[in-house]
Image (cartoon, rainbow over all chains, first blue to last red):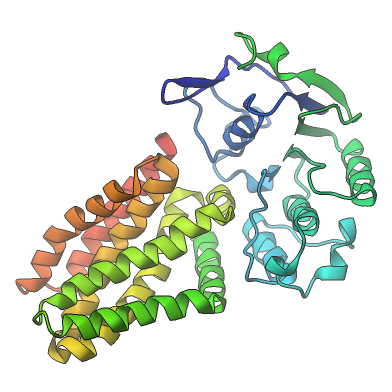
Length: 185
Length: 182
């Protein structure tokens, strides 16, 4: 897969197959977030394609849970209202109290700290229990307890692609420059 | 379609809770109405342009800055997001323009509301281009104004507003769908 913004190539021939938990490690500006957006279908690649379970999903939310770099929640709605909305959109439901979100269900998202927003956003992506998961920098903003719980949860997944500027100690670690045809940006 | 309805409901609920922005929009339309009342009755169309641009900025561009749009595109696609934003921005700009016409010329209120709706259908699209397609905001404003002129002229010359609205909405949906190809 290749991606260009204007004259600048952000991704240059990325070739990656994910069938287990993989952490893609790369420095800031190496194209990790762009790659996540392309996998989610929010951005189109300049060349190449993304296949999930062998095909390009039209509405990917049910087969591919994605956590973007910025939480995608409505700040004015409560956590409960957000989760209810995204459960309807993706065909899932909240089971149990993952990452402790029950403590903040009736708070508006804008009243939460970044760490809590991040927790709620991860839970949002997990609502339909998608068989595949993509998380852009999963530990950003999380405290030690939430980080541990999330990483434990990820270790149990069949397939997940995580991106991070440093090794997370989860799954197979791959450096982004090692999966590009032309070295890192 | 189901996803789009859910997003529209959520967009309205969130917009209703953004009180500061609602007050800002309606006060701006009110002030434009008072000032416009000295500039002649057709100033109401300039108020419609102002209201549509403000709504598009507040409810499309700011939502992009806050990260909300990215998620909505992921769940509802560009066309779904466009339709949802069109409903919210056009409802608010139509209401605020109708309010300003109280000060300018009440008999022009239906026409002014129709023109605000038409301009909003394209202002929402232009705002999506600005945030997603990389179109500079002034160019997005110009695009909205230019594209909305033919249907606006149709309405002023007596064609039914709904026909012009169908045309502008169809343009918006098709072009928003093309955003996926950028």
